[in-house]
Length: 114
Image 1 (cartoon, helix red, strand yellow):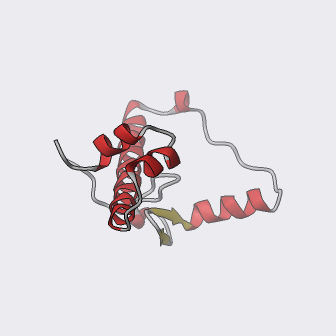
Image 2 (cartoon, one colour):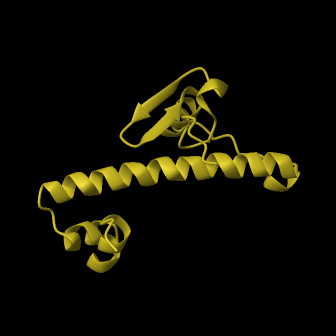
């Protein structure tokens, strides 16, 4: 069953796990990731993420689900933009080129035609 909870596209935390979740075009960012971005832009040393091998199987499974949900949100946003570009007569070749793929691959991925 897909996870339809809004999540940070960077860390995967759900809306109820953070203080704020900011929506952007096809992506979300939480207040905690904004702080990390500010540190990075300001040249401050970055904190490192804990190693994966220190996590339990349940923690890794939960993170995997969160990451997959974020991927699905981004994929939906890309699809929306492709559909809008097509209504503006942007060619499959231009869309494919922008995505680093072929015209045919872009058409197969986004056209919804068999």
